[in-house]
Length: 187
Image (cartoon, rainbow, N blue to C red; front, side):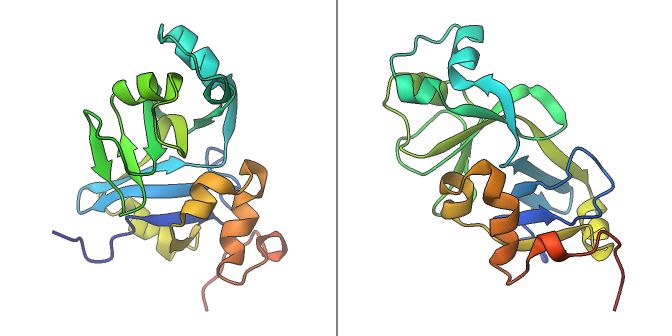
């Protein structure tokens, strides 16, 4: 059942006046939003950790050199020890949920094994942690002009360079976010 006003499969673009440093200049894919709250993954904040380092920590045998060089994202301030993989649909994994017809979220380790050996999805983004909102919290933040939202696109999630995603996502609305005042207001 679809939640009225759901922001699932939307990109949240932090406004320049974002008061929380965890979300300053971020783009967050909302993976689930219902009456109980919301869960999202920040898609533009790479950590100082490559996927190869994560493979080593988890004792995953890696033969895919390209994958080992992929940066791991800081997906949000909640449960930073948990891994989340956004990816294009294809092979089935133990614990996947569909975000859209184009993007899935997998929480199980089997996808890391597949990526490590070159059998995983062609496009993926690996994150540690997530962003979470309690019931009504995200709706309240939207009313306070903390976020802009745009429909999610694979281009922003997987292809646009990390450093450009915040500006690029806002530009899909015709907004040059670098020129927006950090002081929120209501018309």
